Image (cartoon, rainbow, N blue to C red):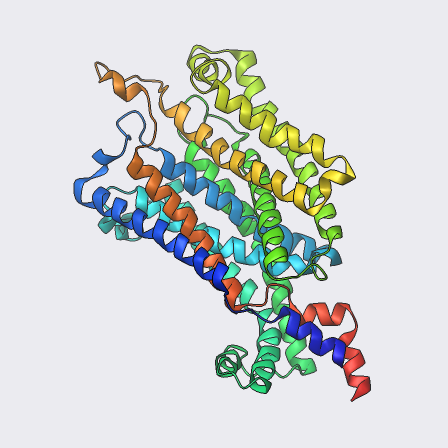
Length: 437
């Protein structure tokens, strides 16, 4: 009984200390600066950005694709690994779902930010055409958010019931709120049967929806007739990259929470070792799709693709392009092959490198192509042939990233990071308690 009580105490949500308060204040300051920048954009128009007739999409769409990519980790860890009965992933499921929820929420908001007239958003739902990939994207993202919310909430029901008793014994008012959220969970065999069946159904259902989210997002590009995007490889190329970015995000968040919440016992080194091996596999798959994406157009060397590929390989984007490929995807594979590279701290550093590289990879996908259209605009300002985000765009972009981190921080404050009920069952503490009683 003592071991079970200690487990509940260890995994119960912790209040923010001084460092946590400073962290939240820091995020809020960034968000406030972003809101002011967005006010400038809203009142003065998109002229405050560097987007013009050439670069119709810029850092906002790059950021949108990045958020969609990271959100895919929810289906990878909480669905794919759970269904395949990988027990080592149990402590990571809640973290992955929290990251997915925060990312998909910000993906939707980023699209609104990119709109010059957000007041016309409702036109998509009223006048949207079924043939439009944009409409498809709105539908699948909404569906994915709904299923992800259920997938994070249902497994929390037993934990909420545990926290209700825990806080009641501690004399805390939080007990009332957790009691309401637990929906009268008692742990009866009938409730467990319904819960397990529901979770499994959602886990199976979210996999094709998650793949559809990023596949449809890739179709926003590949259905347009532009060099660099006119590819049938884009669907799997985007999905593979999404798994890489999402896994890197979970590695970073897991390391931070492990350190700040003293969860080394429940998030052991073994988890980082397995995540490192998983990241190696995902990076290798993504490198394969990158070779396909660039080798074939380079081999055909059509006049339309030539200028685009030259800008990536040797031109204005060459340093960024090769840095992303070698530093963010090839270098991590080399490091993670060795066991010492899969220790927690090296994994955190590698995760950071991969995640930053994944963001810039989306920027490389979006921007250079727009500057090399099939039908060039005649006699335009030379400045329009280049694009780099303005301070307004960067401020808003950092604001969205800070907002995602704030959502994660708030969820971590009120939800148990590691599933309490599942961890207790995995360690046979539930059965031990029954025998002792």
